[in-house]
Image (tube, rainbow, N blue to C red; front, top):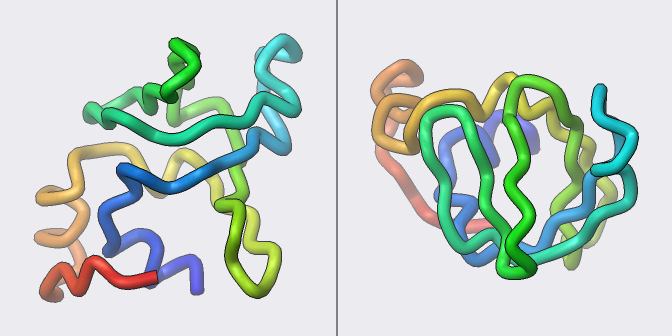
Length: 90
């Protein structure tokens, strides 16, 4: 599942921060409205550095914890690294 998320556009997904080097981010929830190479931006004006958090995507049938480190880079660059098409499905 984590590999599929790596290949998918995460914008529009509801997430929760489950681990972070910054304790103020723990438990923060929101909808991803923008993503840059190193940051995730949520609708509640919270910016999350990808290199220092673990997140879970809410609303999935199973709980999947994703290291923000695997999300570093733009969606286009992540797909190119994998050599796969973006199915944009979850």
